Image (cartoon, rainbow over all chains, first blue to last red; front, side, top):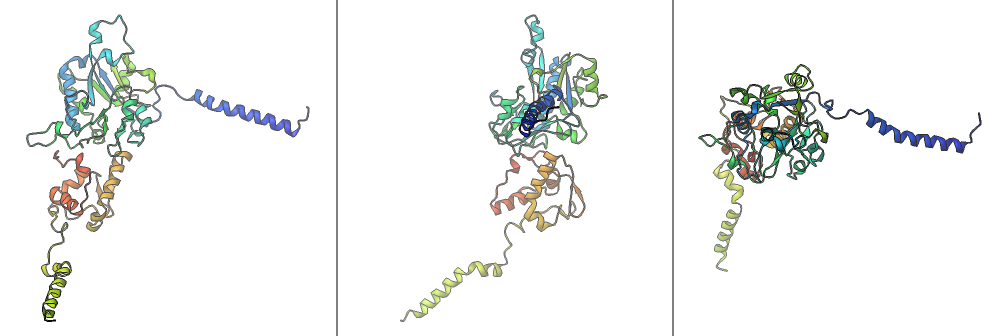
Length: 265
Length: 130
C-alpha cells in the first residue's frame, strides 16, 4: 500500500470527521420516534369523548357545570373575555381538517366538547418564557403555575386548539357563589392578567378522584361513558381498551402536537 | 435676665416632650402593636404552629413559597417539620385550618408591617370565603 504523507492523512481524516458530523444528527433524527410519542412521561392521562352520548345537552351541561364549580370558573357573558375550560363547539369547527363536501349537515352541526388536549408535544409549553406552563413528567398533564404566569399570552397564540383563556379582568365578581356569598370550591380563583385552562383536575387526581366532568356525566341518565378518563400508557386501562377496539379521531393530528383527548362515535 | 426661670421650665417641658417615645412605653406599658393583638388559634385546635412561633413570624413567607413550588411544580405533597410532624403543604387547607380568622391574624399584622401580599387575590379561606 502506498504510504501517505502526514498532510494527506490529516486531510482525509478531516473529511471523514466532517462527514460523520453531518451524518450523525441525520441518523439520530431518523431513529427518533415520530408522532404520538408518550415515552417522555411515565404516564399519560387521556380522555375519550363519546360523540353520540354528548349529543344530549344535559350531558354537556353537567360536564361544564361540574368543571365551573370545581374550579371557580367565572361566567363572563362577553365572548371576547369569557373563560372556558371545557367548551361546546360544532363538529364542523372542531374537526375542520376532517370534513368534506359530502358530509350531511346534521353531521357537521353535531356538538362537540372541547378541552385542553394535554398534548404529548405541547407547543404552549415550548413558547412559555417563564415556564409557568409545563408538561408534568409523572402523568403527562400540561400544568399551569398561576404564580409564574406573566400574562404574555404566547401560549394562547401557540395553542392550535384555542384551549386557553386570558383573564382580562378580575374574575371574582363573575364566579358563582352560595347564599352566603362564598365560592363553591376552595380551588384558588385566578386574578387579572393570567392565562388559564383545563388541568385535567390535577388536584382531584392527587386525592384519587376522577376529573369532575367525568364524574358528573355519569350521574346523568344516558351519560355513562360519555367521558372516559385513564392512563394511555397502561394497555389495560379503559381508554386504551376503547381506542384499540373503536375507530377514533383527535383534533388536528397532522400538526404533531399529539393530542390526548380522543373522540369516538 | 429675669426670664431665666421661664426658660428653664420651657426647656424641661421641651425635653420631656421630645423624649416621650422613650419613656412613654415604659410608663404606659402599652402593648407592642401588631403582635399581641393578633388572634391566635383556639388552643383546643392547636397549640404549636408548624415550626417555632418566632421562626414562623420571620419566615412564614419563605415557607409558603417553598410549599408553593413543592406542591405545584415538584408534586411534593408532604412537608416534614423540624419536629418530625407531617403537613400537607397548603395555605388554605393547612394554615387557615387553624388560623381561622384571617382578618385578625394575617391582615392585622400585614397592615401593621405595611406589606400587601397578593395571596388573597386568588386563594380563599376554607369553605370558599373570598
